Image 1: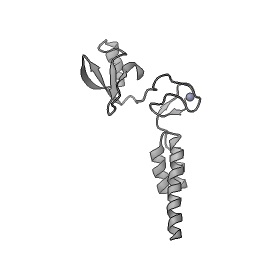
Image 2: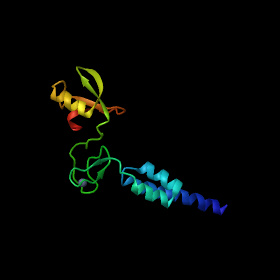
Image 3: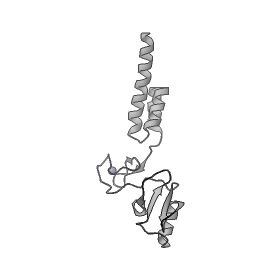
Image 4: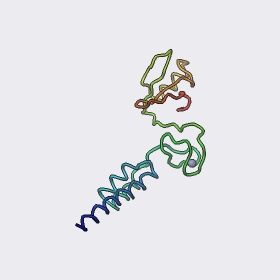
Length: 137
Ligand SMILES: [Zn+2]
């Protein structure tokens, strides 16, 4: 029975280390799975897959989407860093009506066209938090 214990301990350990490695690159869940299944090989793969999240405008380090502060250089973004790649879609509230979803480039166009303003509230699809459009641009 002891051998089983060590077996499971090793698997859990592999997943845990994988998670820690993945977490630094916004890939915690992938790191956990890879470490769990492949052990040290999974850790290496975790290090090789492209990091998730956004890039810090100051140091170009990796920052998780929605972070307010860079964990690499400590710069405070002041507002939410753009949490969405351009493919993400947003709903906006115009004249008390929800419209969309629109992509970020589309939102920029709507502002330029004066259909909405930077203060218009929007929510990322799948998100319940309404934030001024300007915070995403
Ligand atoms: Zn930074």
